[in-house]
Image (cartoon, rainbow, N blue to C red; front, top):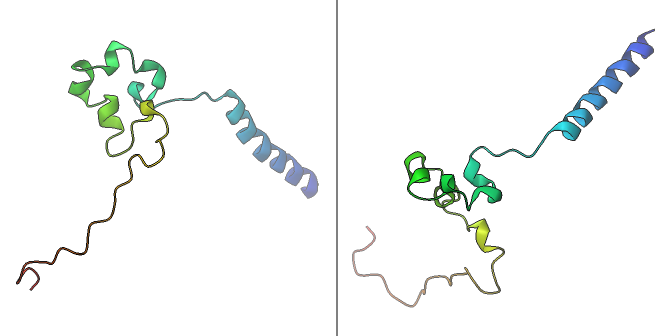
Length: 92
């Protein structure tokens, strides 16, 4: 009897996540995160600037996905040069 209940419990635990994954849709927290909305008025200044939901605000500090993947060598910065000495007394 206990094995039967265990099998039903396992079946339910497997069916629920699979069911959710089938019926769920892609959703975005902000409408301007959806690339389909980037050309609409709600994602253009000044409307989105009030709520700070413009693509420029949402993807702050990251590469703008509208630009596609970076080209070779683009976006890479060289490390600062160590040949420039620090001024005397800079570190105490």
